[in-house]
Image (cartoon, rainbow, N blue to C red; front, side, top):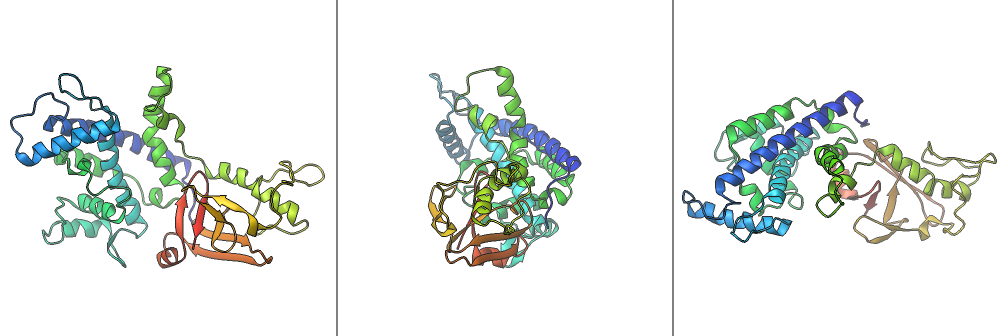
Length: 347
């Protein structure tokens, strides 16, 4: 069963991610300057391949919100942040996948980071990578093409390998395996990445606009907060419809009145059968909570997931599997839809 991060380990992860953002943004800006992406004039030292990359990066930057000035120079603020974010998180995800035995060379063949280092030494298996970490990042991107866009010009931008890669490798190597197998670590890394930017926005006291909004609003919701909301909504509904019965999911945070009824109310306007519930999943699709779609409640913070529902005929439906080590069951039975404290499973 996976546990959440301990406080010391969470602090270590926070410090690592914050340091990584500083390194990544400096490296990204240096690489962009080397290509003259923000310059008004095309640098003379660029060959045709790098000239084409420069044009694509400038166009990508404008699509992100960077402004092209009247003298043909271009702001690099958004592009710098994206380059830093994408390169660091590709390496970070590679470590997450490797520590959970999910970094695959081919289906059914997970690799360790040590094996990636060995493969990177052979041109026939390196996939063009110069190091094991770079190969691991490319494998992660190949596995997650919707996360790391394979044709994005961002990944064609080369950093100064000797300094930046060594620093990133050292930062990642300082983190123990437990930092990548905890139940909540993946949620924390994004908030830690945004922490410095969030402090800058709050200190500036500027009006919150599109540029500032993600840093101050996209925060990780800790499991107990989600459980409190679930237990006092869906859990309260269950208690009122099944008096005297023990709920199959422990309702740790359920608040009740002196007479034992839920403090949140009886939800009289809600259906009496779970089969008639509808769930709006994070992809904005309505799903039934019986048969094909089930809510994952209560045990969402643990490595062993127990999905409990009530069929239309009163039959209890229970499915249990270990995530992510039971990968075949995961692929066979479920597609994950992650959202604000809700994980919907669909057959």
